[in-house]
Structure formats: C-alpha cells, structure tokens
Length: 235
Image (cartoon, rainbow, N blue to C red; front, side, top):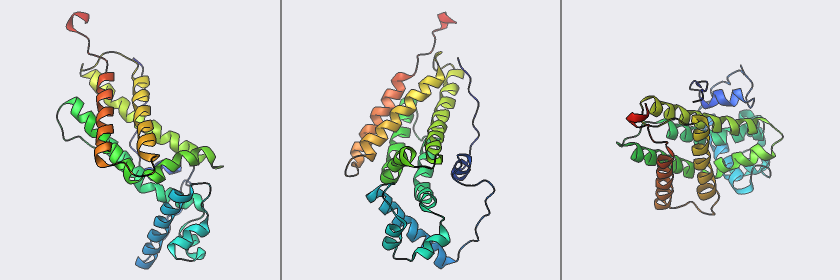
C-alpha cells in the first residue's frame, strides 16, 4: 500500500490562482451594473463560440468582439487578454465536471454507482465539449505554462478523488491490496481519454443514448478493475 497526501477541496478560482493563471491577491473588480453584466456574458458566449470554431491559437480579440457586437474597449473593461476570457469561457464546463465527479450517487450497489458517475461525467463533458477539448490545445500550444499546469492540476484532482474512494473501499475490506495510486491513475486516464475521443472530437455531439452506452461501459470496466477482497483464510 502507498500513501498519498490528502488534497483539500478547492474552488476552481483557487486552482486558477494556484497554477499561476490568476495573480494571487488580485484586487476584486467592482461588481458591474446589469448592463455591464450582460455585456460580459455576451463576450464570454462569443468567446466560447469563437474558440470552438477557430481553435485556441487562431482566435483573436476582434473575432470575439465582432461576434459579441461590441467594441474592443468593452472587451478590455472586463478582460485583460485572450487568456483571461478563455479562462472565463472554460469556467462553467470545468465546474460542472468537478461537480459530476464529486456528487453523491442515487443508486445502490457499487457497479450501478460507478455507471451513474461515469454517465454523469460524460454528459457534463458533452454540454461543454468544444471548450473543454480546447484545454488540451492550450496546454500544448500556449506560451503561458499556466494552461499546462491547469490541465495537469485538474487531472490530478480527479485522480486524487478516485484514490480517496478506493481507499475507503479498501478500509472497509471491500477490495484487496493493490497500488491505489496506479489504479486511480489508470481509471482516471481511461475516463478522460474516452471523453476526449468519443465525446469531444466527433463532428457532432453524440446522442444521449451513445453517451449512456459509453458511461455504462466505463462503469463496468472500473468495477471489474477493482481488486477482489481477501478471503477470510488469507487474513
């Protein structure tokens, strides 16, 4: 058995700061009026569309402001640069993914619970699939190393949650001894790659039935990967 430091829960904004994408202790901007809020929301939505259509490396501020039907001056009242608006564009999707893997399941039995968690994760990914897929592009192509650190940190957080779940099963005697770090890594990589390849990359969003099928397959593989508990004679 290996041990791993427990990672305390953090907000997504805390993660942005931790990886260097947001300056620590940055002053909180004044809350905009309703008109300002609507302008910001329109810019973020336009950014999501532009990044999804053109990619992370080819999107320009002018593309976003043109689609948002606003002036570049309005853009810079709310955002410092393209990376800043990219973070805002990803925020909802990343938050949903985190919640999908953290929430309690409603089914009984470990197999059905694993299927439910994976289906929930894939549906959350599908709702934001274009912008979430682009995090990999930003991690690989951006001169800002913070995006690579963000991708790795979010991945590590997912794996850490999986490891804590495995540890609870082991402590209750429901699974046998194994390297929990490697098992959590393997399970996390499988779900991440399935989401990226089968939900993020296709030309059109997969149908709900297809996402359910993928989630069920993942849940079944997760369940079969759990090491069997030791028999009483082995204690």
